[in-house]
Image 1 (cartoon, protein in one colour):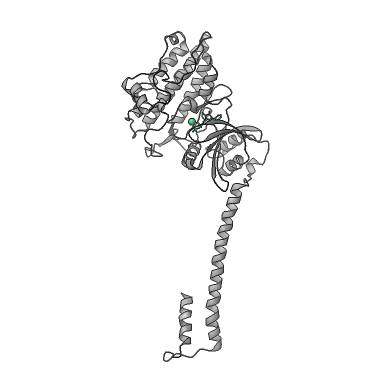
Image 2 (cartoon, rainbow, N blue to C red):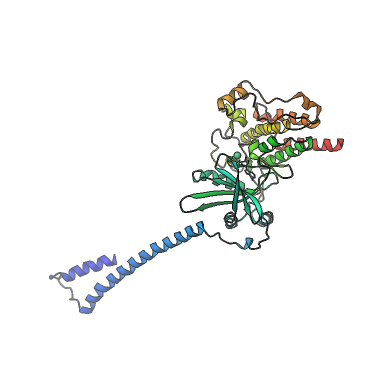
Length: 409
Ligand code: ADP
Ligand code: MG
């Protein structure tokens, strides 16, 4: 504005005809009128250029740091800190939802990848090393950014940590200049998935009970809402299967792959994401998902669908339970009823129309633990979702099997 006023003034000065009554301009005034606006113009231009340059500097610094320099954090200064200690320190002092983001980033950027250990829906899972410890790194492609973000978000739910839920360590998005690498770092379990484990080994009766109890405990914790500041929302998994359960060194299990999970906010009675229609693995889908009658308005529906899948996982486990030296070979549920990559239609015909379920062998009746496991399975597989057991009930029933066994021993 100031500049345009001055310019019009100058134009007036240039005119030979002056408005009547206006005083004539001295040399000093003339110089001031010309110099002040032009220097203001210069300052303005310089400021503009500098700001743009400054923004570029900050941006390129971020890129540089993104690509090369992990940010060091006080927490990681002590080189003998093991991951378990770090996570313990953080979860007891912090919000209970995991390591601070800067620490996560620093850990992720100092991991050295070793070998591929799995492939799933989203890219690859690697074994990596961090300060002499093994970790698992799930690498998402950049087009699956939403899945990476979602899984990281679920794992960082307040108070989710549990001995039977995969221990989350870090999430990191690293821009290497041409593409973005999305990492999810977790505890590494050398036995791999329950699917791999059961293909390789049979389990003793005790082993089956301990494994079943750990899976039920993990699911009960996931499903449970804990109210209060140190509470957690209820979470439904929505893709429970033997490939999404990992086996620990001590032959107990952790529930993994929380990418499709949904959380329930009980105060508003809402589910945190639009619970998209029919997700999960077809073979493990509950009848109400297959025939599209699942009640989306009730969170209980999602938990009940998980319970159906839990029954199938128990069946896979019990099949491999060795009694008097014999057991079945590993088989997927419904291996004898549907093709190898079944469609929803294939599954619906068997599960909803013919109402078939995996076979529960008669021999299971002669072993108390297997008899109880068989009964639990049936009560997880009811066509009516409301009739199924809850995860907490399954956990209690399995834990009583241990008690019966202990008493007998
Ligand atoms: P996706 O979402 O792609 O299915 P998962 O998280 O289910 O990925 O992992 C795929 C496979 O990678 C698993 O079935 C398992 O064999 C292996 N895996 C994943 N996480 C770990 C881990 N923490 N330790 C050992 N193996 C793992
Ligand atoms: Mg998976």
